Length: 285
Image 1: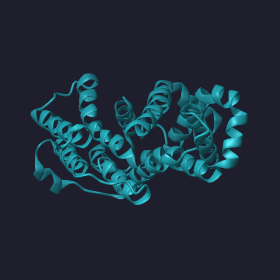
Image 2 (image 1 turned 60 degrees about the vertical axis):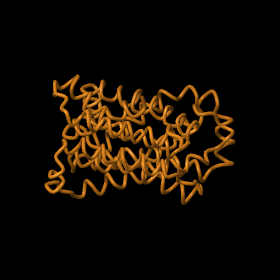
Image 3 (image 1 turned 30 degrees about the vertical axis):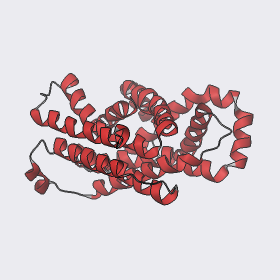
């Protein structure tokens, strides 16, 4: 569900690039999420303040990585690159998480995990290239791609470091805290742009469904599901599910844009599903 909602956010980020600036998109997104989590902040403010005092550095780091930086950098990158390039780059997240887990958490990497990630990554590339490997030679990369790479590194690092989040806060309190802090870090950057109140109100009025989706589904619910996954199966295995994003993208395009599902979609799905099976389920006898 998490990566399904993120797939929609990925499409929206590219779709609204000419109407809403990346800074506006990120700032409004986390402003509305801050409103959503405000009851938690109010009810648990004493507990949160104590936790912040005891875990100041890690909370600031997680707020910047997971809230302020990741989506903002991604939105900026999507204004300069194609969705195809971004999806290919995004498929590197499980590999980066696996590497960082090994370096930071001293987590062992199994052969099944390595093979699973390799197979599902191949499936993603096969799907994005529409089954024609020769298309890879016609791809062009630019500064937007570098920003998408940076956003992927940011999210991968967040997914590994979140292992050190405070134990005295439950998942809801933790999420509410980093959202609030992350929005505070974004606010000066937003105000520096010099947007007029009239223009911003117009943007909200015309795009309230977009902000509603990214705030509720792509932020509040997705972040909770992502952290739940990390708590249950670890960062490396959770990250593997990002390979489902191109599949969900194709399904969403089929449902909402009347695009036709092709044979290469099926082959890509099989490779990705087999890769996830190898990495998460298969046990050597």
